[in-house]
Length: 424
Ligand SMILES: CSC[C@H]1O[C@@H](n2cnc3c(O)ncnc32)[C@H](O)[C@@H]1O
Ligand SMILES: [Zn+2]
Image (spheres, rainbow, N blue to C red):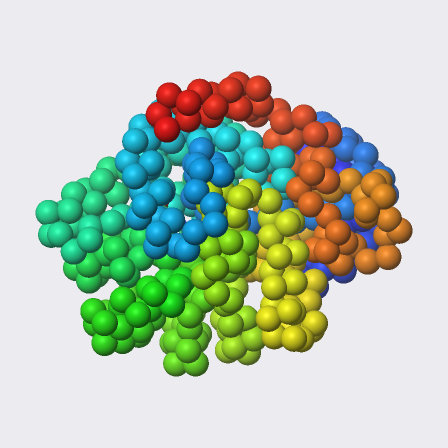
């Protein structure tokens, strides 16, 4: 199968040079980017007045949490989790979570996300929804043992069961990752076991770390060190680890993350909504830490729109540091695309020959995106997910001219509404 995207403004290469060109996709890869490509193709997309962008990589989310959107707002993290979210999540069945996963997948396709790193329960069910949607999903079963050795064993068993189920889907687009929830909900025994299993099975690890001041206080009280020092001391960290948040990091923590090649998934929307704090972006960038961008779940954001998230990231750091240059549009755009892909060991996030064909076509024929003085600036500061017209993953069109081809939109919305009505 081949696709030819004609006459678009292409955000080309790692350097984000914008060129007026055609993009030829053969199979699941970008075969050629050039002016006036003459080769025929099975499908031709006219991209005049459109921007051809790398698809977005949401590096931290809980995709089924759209089910809980709007049910618990205006709370700090611990109260939000313990009093409102966890009691509701305890009622969610496998079927409900699958309905939430469809809802999340639909929202991601419609807003140009092509790959995401997830952490939740029943990830084998999430995997089935992701398979049908056509997205790339990196799926972590969220493990919590609260220091109870019986629960440690149960959680490890469940993670391995879900890993095997996800592997049975036999799709390169869907990968299992280990997802211990956080240092404050997981015992050291569980964290060490996860490290061992990730090495044994060659899987990535994702974990919430240093999200709030109260978390850092808890860990300091329990272990006498920061969460990052704790994880380093037990040999947990490595270039296969993606920590979500990394808000409360001191200079020593930042050096440890840099030394271990850890990626930080930055979630500005969630950090602002839960009043968690502001990630030290300047220190992390100076230390050379890879930073990707995530939305977190839709109960703390409250959507999965990566275009919106880029704007939040850029604006938050400017005002917090009183420095408009600290996170410029290109830096933030790379976080949302190539940096996320790098963390997932994916040859994606860049429009260039040989890269995976994960692409978002964004309609710039709209008043808020004209005149086209600066494409990357418009993508970060002016656009939002509704401007995405076509989404391509692995060389397959998931949405064309606003119509989602892989999922039945009406059915997905109806089912999500029904499960929430009956369970929550
Ligand atoms: C064990 S599955 C994942 C678990 O994480 C919860 N969660 C959602 N957002 C956050 C956040 O910002 N910090 C910590 N935990 C979060 C989610 O509700 C699930 O219980
Ligand atoms: Zn999270």
